[in-house]
Image (cartoon, rainbow, N blue to C red; front, top):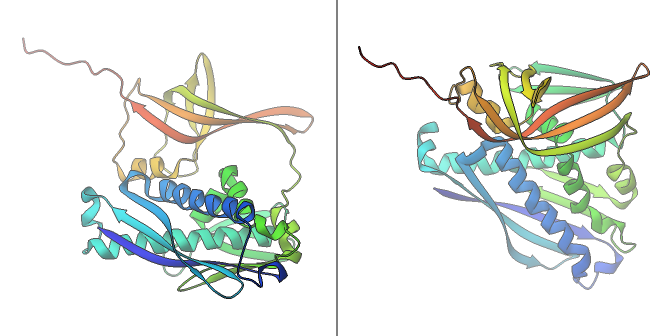
Length: 297
């Protein structure tokens, strides 16, 4: 079942008075916005839903584009809610809200690193994360927090969407849905794209790595003990869709099971020592160990 949810991307500035915009300025912004939609859908819903961004129409007045976020749910998840249309609409709404919240979070951080992170469950039983910097605080959905801090490609795409503001004649960007909006001015652009200073001096993505499971955990934020070759390491599982399947019981494990995954290996300096950490950003395949069949005597 499909559902389309409207969005609008709008730029203002002296160079846009004729309602025209250079292709080389707009194209990277639209491509990055579409990548964001697909990344959020994949991480939140996995293979249970699909999402695609479409250009609906060009609007007069500065330079604005009407967009449609087209979402669909697959047949096997139709019982999640009483109505397929309702479920598809909620998928689109959640993707848009989290995307707008990602923009808000990046603008608020302005290149700073959080001093303190607090997780909480609010009065509506929603999982939230409070981010604190000095006397300031911002509360976001836990998925927003995880996507922003554990997926550097998302931060790059956020920067690319706002990239037309780097041009002298573009002064403001607005991204909006029917329920909320995000506005970024040219004055805030440099702090928006800034990244915090990091003690991490090496970060490598290892693709299609085989991990033999030793101690999987069936709760969030617990590191798993695995064997990578003959090396015993602990990894954090940052693949949200995979962890949702683990927590729901759709993924089960036995001795000898293995994962094929993409891993980020980060090396940093702590207390004058080099510390290496690992996180699984995408589980490609769960390989079950061969099961021994019992034969009747």
